[in-house]
Length: 284
Image (cartoon, rainbow, N blue to C red; front, side, top):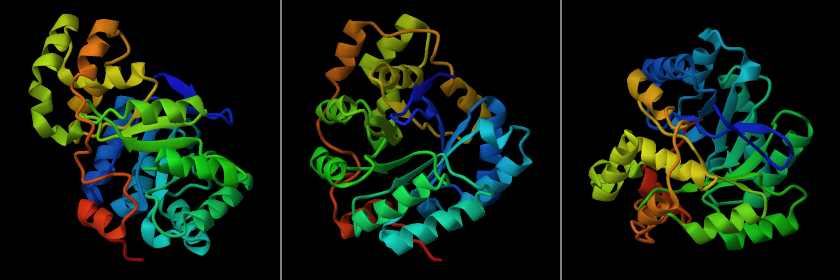
């Protein structure tokens, strides 16, 4: 596994295992399988309603907690100083750990300023090793960097061949903010796994389309969190460190960009919009 170093010196794996939209015994087994396969970064969120399931998986694994990198996210219902404080406390309890490696504000909705102050305090207290955001635009990030004590270290955004956001990625990276991609495979939309461009590139390297997409992200300096419930596919998604895409291949993939989100506007700070996108809610 390769790592990237955040601005505060914390090392973060470039590939992690995403655990969205799966709960209960299935989530526990999936995380146990991922850890056994070699993943050391696990990405969850309060809204996924599986932190307890993941905590059990980690407790039952043979890997030392210090060798794992746990990410969770504060949901919009907790987007205030008090809400974020309580959210982190619940996450620590459910994940059965005394510290979190990375906590993100999941969407720019609600009192993000108060919530960020709460994360800053927990970061300074050593309960969180790194703090960041998700779905933040450059304009909002500029305010956050200028007006907070601690700048976000990570911004997790939609990024895949159909929505590459090159200008945004460059903006964040130029300011020392690690970009992490969610939905790297576009959730299979637009028949991505049968794309003629990606299929040809995969054939050039004796790889699969999924490998090409992950490699394309890594070569752009973007970390990511692919998800699969199948151990064989989990292992396959890690098989991306033994080849490189050429400049021409990278340019070919760039032509696939549509400039439009596939998920209804991932950085649009509108509550109804996000609720429609996820159709989830949190109950405490």
